[in-house]
Image (tube, rainbow, N blue to C red):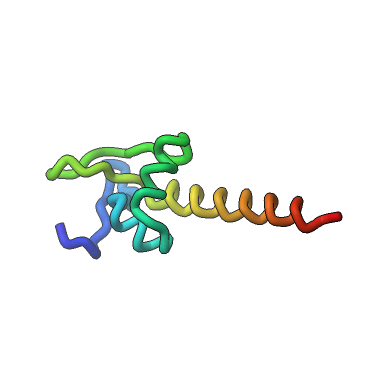
Length: 80
């Protein structure tokens, strides 16, 4: 599969590999794997090459969660 193409799970939902997720979010691929270890995302399936494939919606939600958490930490450190 071309790296620009999205995967589709059996329910018709858009999915991406970790590499695609990193490119979409502007984050390092290791960050994507960190999100998995921390339970923010879970692989939906594996592709024909054994790569983990994640729901695009989960990737977007995880990226938003991390951004909100970072803002809260920043706000708590600057409030006084």
